Length: 303
Image 1 (spheres, rainbow, N blue to C red):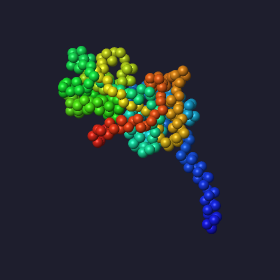
Image 2: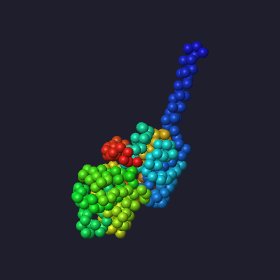
Image 3: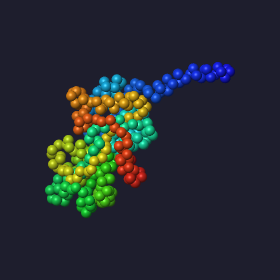
Image 4: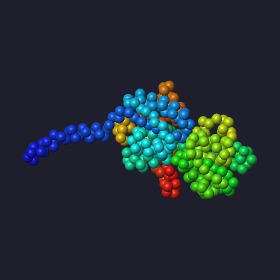
């Protein structure tokens, strides 16, 4: 084939090459798979997630399937390893996913409350009643008392149950690894396990998600009153992988941000996920503050 014919042949292929490239960069998935970090009651989580799958199937026009994750790392790794397409993560696991995704992971939506999230420090009621621990506005007040108290965080990868409470303790001059009589984590059961540990007296103090505590029973809250509320920080978000295409990621964002409390099915989802009012489109740059806190801890400290 001479040069002129070769040039014409190559030119003829260009439109097809363009179509192929466009199709590859904007795939239409036959199915979408999602998961949620297991920081609440697993049975309730499965129930609400299956309800969400049914709603999203209608809104997105493709089957949506819920895949349970055994722990925080499984939710992140599933997204990266093409076992999941979008996931509900905490602040710390959101930045983990962004880092591991190397530009192929997007933060899609967040609840209005997640832009100003908080952790509560709670204490066993007996210690509050006898004055051993008092409500405080400065965590430094715990410094002299910590050596006689036991403390529990939630899951080591939890933003509201560990990362941010540890950060605020450290900022107050308290090293949780050495300052307390003993310090531990709740390996399973999420924020509910932290609350139970303090209610029962298995731990004198604990840190947990304010949203979980606010919805707990009056009896549990009375047995483990709040003694400190942290400053606000960003936390949970829906995070998706670009393998499903930018168009589908936009549709997922819109499916959440357009949930209407006047619609019974949408209201059930909003009630389960507990925003103050709604989900909002999310900008991943807002989670940079969480990345800085995560990276300020000793290397290898977080799983």
